[in-house]
Length: 84
Image 1 (cartoon, rainbow, N blue to C red):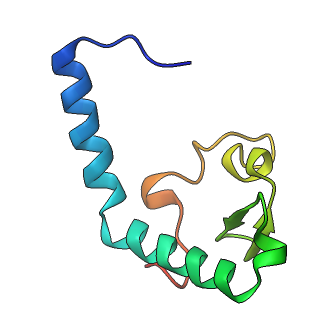
Image 2 (cartoon, helix red, strand yellow):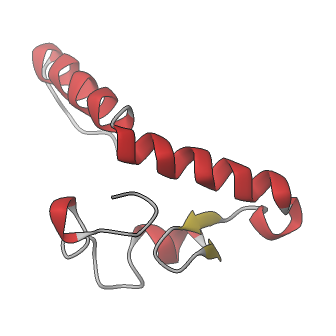
């Protein structure tokens, strides 16, 4: 469901989202996930790469942190040897 934002809030959110997507850690994670998917397309089909577990998992499991939410692994609380 889309958020109901004013035009100014929508522009501000787009700028924040783009800045996050282009952060060095996020770019490294995206590049790594793409390399893994190209190396094994059958394992990657309809799945997300989980950088913490180091394997492809369902979208639901990955984005919901296995039902625990994402608050604990956000920001500085989530460090992985490849992306620090």
